[in-house]
Image (cartoon, rainbow, N blue to C red):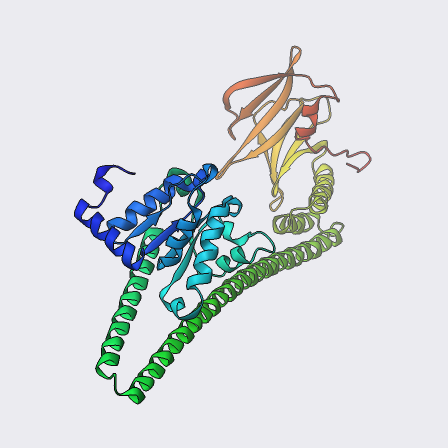
Length: 437
């Protein structure tokens, strides 16, 4: 950071020294050597590139230094920049420089032409030592924020450099204006040496102007404080608005759930009414009872609806068992029954498919096996037959005309404790002797 390319030209350096020796520096940088040396040097170089006259104390505090000289230079500078790191409060050098600047420039007529700018590194400005008025006074000034990483790497943020440079130029311009005003006043005073009354009027006007500048500066600080409070209030109102929106969304979601529950209860109530009608029709017409129970199951699936369907099918099976001697219901799918008929006289058993609506049976030209099930398709149906083959179970699927579909599927017998038993579909058989399922 101290290479020749970053230094001002030699002629400009000489001019800077002359101006600073006569009128003081534009900016004095106070910092803690152990943690902010690189950062302060980089900030010094960046500000001098912008035409400002900057003083940087590079003496090592631990080995002693010319503190009285630094305090005098700091008090003559128009702007004091303090790099406030966590450990800056332990530096007696920095504290004395801040105190000297505060006492000599931040009170009286020089106050409008002076600035104290703390660079707040990771909010270190908010934790001054208790009871130390110097650090407390520093924390009341308008600060500019900086990250700890920038201090460690020695790379000041652009907004920090811009803010300090603008403040330095503004204060310098104010000082030049004040100097010019003072010079003009002296000239006028000399010209009007014999006009004592006029001179007193001019002095009174100048004093009034200084008072107005001081008042305006205080008013500006008050407005900045008020603006900060308003920003805090706006942030708090935004947070409350977001919380209110979250509550409204939660209430709307709860309302949707309640509507869904009410719909479910209404559907369940309608299904219960259909099921009641189905049970009341069992004795008079089991076919109508089955259809009512089937509608109830389609409306709201429930074990009670399926039980009503099985009861209706059982009653219908008893009717067909009486209508077709020796026939029992092997399976039911919708309004279709699969009957297993065993004629008297020792003839072979057979399977028949019956539509509940018409009541006319259709004999199937397939072997009945041990059990059979209906397999409904979109526009047709098939029959699945189970029989014994050696020590295994054999399953075969048949078309309506009796033609087998594919090859049979074999499986072993299952014991009652086999967990697969709970997932198997058990066919419905009816006993014509006792009339019970």
